[in-house]
Length: 115
Length: 114
Image (cartoon, rainbow over all chains, first blue to last red; front, top):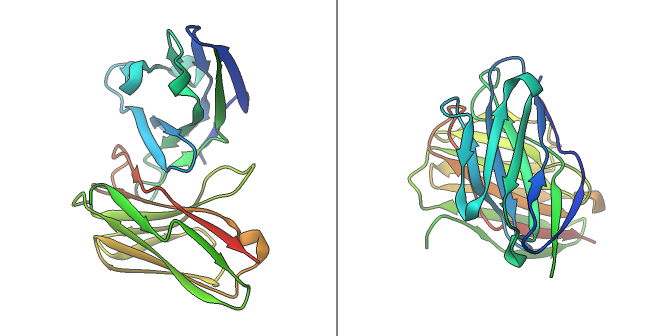
């Protein structure tokens, strides 16, 4: 069975500071990993995905994530936070043990950006 | 319309009512999903449809009844709900059922059961 843990349900950074949102997964087989963002009163929007090509994945809005198999991690980073980055972020995993494309989500991390 | 749309965006219903949520995807995808998003709980997958066939029912109570008449439309029929069913219900679609396909989400229906 696969699972996703997002450390820190709330993260607060100052505008211009580094954003680091943590995600650790467990999976019995090499996984596919995703980061989604959810703005208030909206659905989830894909930021980036890892599908076993490059371990450093670049996404939209300046975000990137690095797959580290030895640490079973897929942390999300952005060098400089903007006020518009305030949202909730979800890490998700999918692997071949699923009967189809079923994502398991972490509990989410709410990012707050202070001026 | 583009992407994944959901109607209504907000719904308030009593426990004895019957209502339906509608989802439509304009992406030419073949798989569609219903998720439940409750406060303080991770996103929960409810149902998966692949080429109109239900491939997953994640132990969802029978008061939730999905319907997928074609690959573009997905419904969630609701009856005799409980207050704990109040949540944001999200629909998603993906190109296929392979593991690497990302899912595209609609804006959700905010359901309140009184």
